[in-house]
Image (tube, rainbow over all chains, first blue to last red; front, side):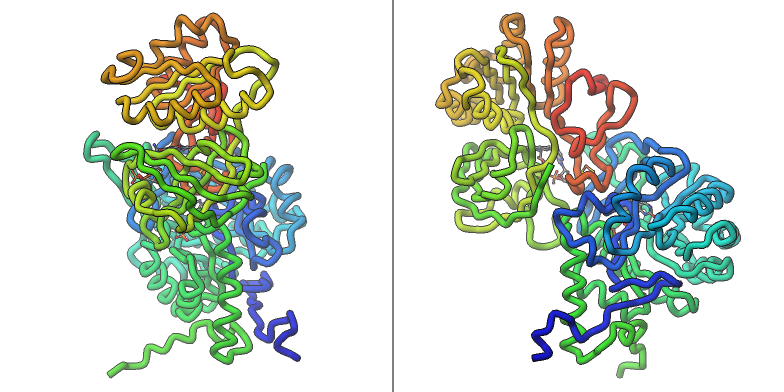
Length: 315
Length: 261
Ligand SMILES: Cc1cc2nc3c(=O)[nH]c(=O)nc-3n(C[C@H](O)[C@H](O)[C@H](O)COP(=O)(O)OP(=O)(O)OC[C@H]3O[C@@H](n4cnc5c(N)ncnc54)[C@H](O)[C@@H]3O)c2cc1C
Ligand SMILES: Cc1cc2nc3c(=O)[nH]c(=O)nc-3n(C[C@H](O)[C@H](O)[C@H](O)COP(=O)(O)O)c2cc1C
Ligand code: FES
């Protein structure tokens, strides 16, 4: 009997600007470590792709504590881009990532166009990396990528530099802390981006009213989690309508239904972020949930779902 | 260290005082892996608010797979936890972090203040399980009032320990801080384990440092994941680096911690 066969009749495969994913479920940078941290909770081989914690040329220590604050249905973080740096990433983290079956995307960050270009060039020399995700949007580091992510010309320049110095597919990750997200998307598309991911965190703040002090040592931080989902969804929809390259939806995704909303809005893939913290098996659950949804809706391919939103006038 | 996600069942939920609770969870898989000093991340709600899991030390374990938590209601998560009753299930991730260590067969002192007592019972049980005789180790416990100290102290006493007590209001044992009980004892022990409010741990760490006695402290920070992924759980290390409590800790050599910040 066919339906008892392990092989599901539905096809979840998608292509993100040259990166072929077995399914559209990825894990977001900074929320999934370097993969290994989750090996006991989720089937790493079955995930569409892992985006690793943002890497800079030199290791970064990050911000002083307190770095995280829980907020209603969300959290603020001011990690400050703490990471092991390029050299240790390649020596200590990449070998494990190479041993798992899923696609590996390396998230990169820098203080200048030259730093992004250098990272792109060096990472392209190593086997086991399927793509780059350029973080032009992290709000945490005062000197960091914030200027790139809020200025279309700067964003385009970084994209061009990374493309020029890399043989890998390049995903540019947008900041939501802008007035016109479509303009940012068009700029990075013009810069040669193979795909766009969004959103990074929204800048927020929390105050301890007894001490009259900010809760985060950095004063401000990035808001993530279910609280940001409607904003992320709106921006993904706007960007998907503005560009012709694939879009990856990120922001508050924790369930199959969340992922479906983003796909219907026009995302070709999704990334799970904060949900990994409270539900480390979320990726597995969403992958099987997508299969079930397609079967129930008599769809054979997930691709038919992407951008299928009907905005025709409702009376 | 191996950790897993386990759906535990509440065997009993006891209220000790108006804000202190003891929860007995049947979690045989986590218990089989657990070492004293480790913690679990507890899901306190089935919806998205509160969003994050809450970290709690493993208070004690039993041979038949029970895991005990001792906690105080502070805010949203612990209040929800306190409303749970026998038979309900609680989603846990654990055991997480490193553990207390003991080398040789010398005498040690365990000092706990408030909810910092929680991880020490499991450690005391381990130390009394053959490594050394309980009577030779010292246990110092402190709390606000007799009502919250007596029930937890009894558990140490039934392991055979001589327990010295202190309360803020003098209702049981020494009237004052538990750290004030340490100086006369310190010269006769070769190791100290402390958990409690930061001022207590800092004071104990200083006393140990002065006469060069090794001290292990169980540290607390805000945590999003407990898995080493979010990098949110930092404390200042004495060497100028940041330490991640869920990965490098929660148990630290007191000398590794920068106490002055
Ligand atoms: C390793 C470790 C072991 C712990 N063991 C125990 C224990 O055995 N018994 C016990 O009563 N408490 C323990 N705590 C503290 C316990 O985690 C907090 O009391 C609890 O998270 C408060 O949650 P809440 O929702 O009630 O409070 P809220 O104030 O509503 O919580 C808001 C946010 O702040 C965090 N938070 C608040 N207070 C603390 C704190 N002191 N430490 C860390 N995060 C905090 C919460 O986790 C949550 O993310 C431990 C903490 C750590 C890090
Ligand atoms: C603790 C934490 C660390 C993060 N670190 C990075 C990072 O290094 N690089 C990056 O591009 N995004 C980083 N992000 C942003 C996430 O990848 C994601 O874009 C954002 O959290 C929104 O998705 P979510 O609501 O599903 O978490 C981080 C987010 C969190 C919560
Ligand atoms: S709590 Fe997330 S890294 Fe420690």
